[in-house]
Length: 91
Length: 174
Picture (tube, rainbow over the protein chains, first blue to last red):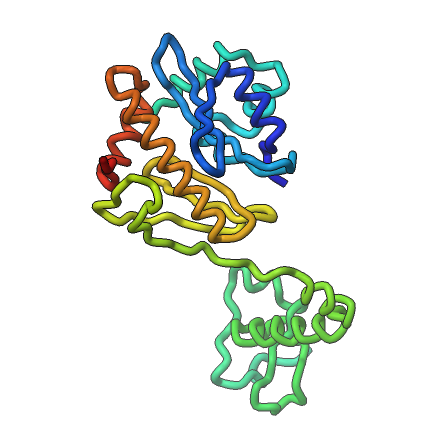
């Protein structure tokens, strides 16, 4: 079973205050901004199944499985995630 | 106790170190049958004898413990499907040209398939391999378009790098 299902993916997108580009055919593209700068994107799959896998978000958001769950289920704030995201910026 | 002088010449002598720990536990093997097969001489230990012993014990284990139920269980373990590398040389029907083909990987993931374009850090899923690739192309195209729309100083460092990677393979038409 995937770490991030569609329900959790939508919760994370909401937590990160993502805007959506709904033009792609199979996905909604979530756009995460900080101070008007686009810093991360990830796709949320269309489809009614709640179990649809979204583990690609782990790489897109540079988080571990545990951190993704914390992000979606409240313990991790948006600011905390921003700190993690910047710390893990590839050299 | 039987003497080592009865050991066949082609069987090496026991070592003084770790091999002695096995003496009396792992019997030496008489490959020429001069001594009626197995004997338990404490001093007659050899690598050849050890190898043969392990083989015999493994055979015995298989005979005693591998039951039809075990074989039935093994038969129900799904085959591991390998990772496949797919060359992408078109983004049709998107208005995006692939001027340099690139590779993506597709592999089983949970009960679906996962397609990755690792260089650009983009991934997608699908119920079949083809659907996973189709969805990945969809996310590549939409990400490329979005990044191009933001390249007027409104991209973070990670996405600037991602756009540079995508630009080395893709260009927008029209």
